[in-house]
Image (cartoon, rainbow, N blue to C red; front, side, top):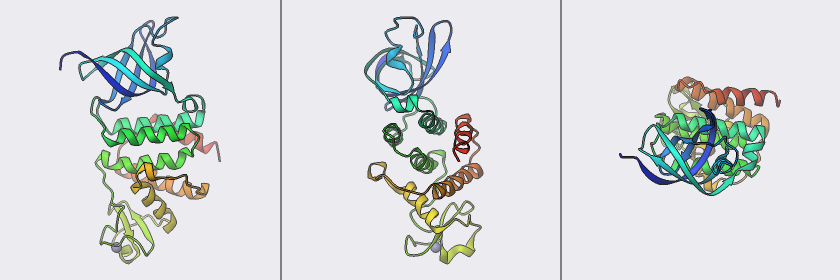
Length: 252
Ligand SMILES: [Zn+2]
């Protein structure tokens, strides 16, 4: 594709100084997925684009792009900053991890479909002060299919059972297992309430998720279970995740 101007909607989430006064910024866009733009002169005083392209700002971006490699940011319209994500260390760490995790499931300039709405909705809710832990677990679970791991949460891996008895999760079997089939596979031995919470988070459309009040101890159980699913299924080592884990450790 020839280099052309294109309007994209989305979010800027990572800045890196480049050359003397330029910036390389990572973006998530509705139209083109993840991409990197160069912002010429962003570090110069009175730069027209600097204020409109800070981290965690959303807007309409006019970029010069050829659909691969580096694009160039030309102009920004309707820019708005998600201030809490920018200024709050914890919210920032969660948001950075979410974006990093989503970015690794796709290649640059690959539209991410409904995941765009999911990630933007979650970021807005964290920005408005909602509990980032559960929202992050929801994204982790709902992203697994994008990584080619499609765990079965809707019903038992071995049958149609979807309710009425305790469920556990089996990494080996790739999904939830009902009590009748517990002997069929190795399982995680999660409390049934933890499996139920994971099933809700994995299956609920983000628009239908109300504010949930869940005890910290319960959230820790599902967090560890989800981390195990990721650890034993995928080969990911994200710096943003290690930072988030350190931050969370210091909070207990
Ligand atoms: Zn079953």
